[in-house]
Length: 334
Image (spheres, rainbow, N blue to C red):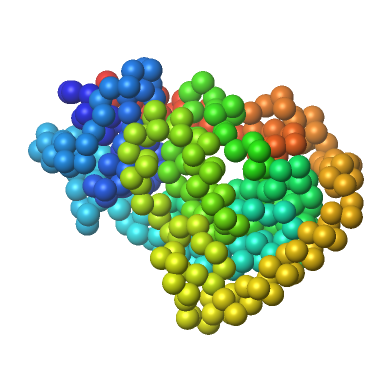
């Protein structure tokens, strides 16, 4: 089996871990370069060659095809799984968009991005909604205070009773610390493909574009990512559609008519928030932070606490997924 076929299979194997078959275009967009495992930038696949190789793999009965999706042989059931989860994910995304509208008015919030399984529209009904929040430099703790605080007051944060449709704010980045290569594990396929499933819902002005530019190292692993059509919305300003036109549906019409008022509210909130220095917000949140987070801070890859990154993942499964992925690859003798 040549490198092109192997890398297509490695791509399909990864997404099979999440019961997620791929369309031909998705195979191209998420195509894994050989660099990801052996450090060699070879096995690059152009669109035509990848589409052709998919047919060859079907003929060899290594993979199968149904309803526009490609998947590993014997895994036909994940096609219906994906369809079911896409319907549920659309409901969650509507909820996420309303939340992002509100977050965009809060002080020092620069971008709100849906991530993890919902970013691929692969969320289960019982899942929560994960956000990556990008903040103004030097104000990451202030932005977190307002974002997490308001949603806590409104009972929209995950709790011991339920996480379904709640909002998880466990990942914050400041604009002066957007490069995530520094938190990449030695073997980290999860982080690599995490980038391909991001859905920006609020962008204060080119923030998402700068974020992706700061992380161009990812293209060593996903060479076609620059051509990827991210599912969902592109970064937009309030009251505009992804194409830049003012929208006319009721919710977005409200946003359009209230966009100036929204910016006024944001500016007022930022002025009031600025009356207290960043260190005050940091100190108070550190005092009420769970002891387990403090104990694991900057000692494990899941919990990172500094002035540029706030990452609160007590259970960081990246190493586990990497191990499972490598085992599957070995089973295919790739």
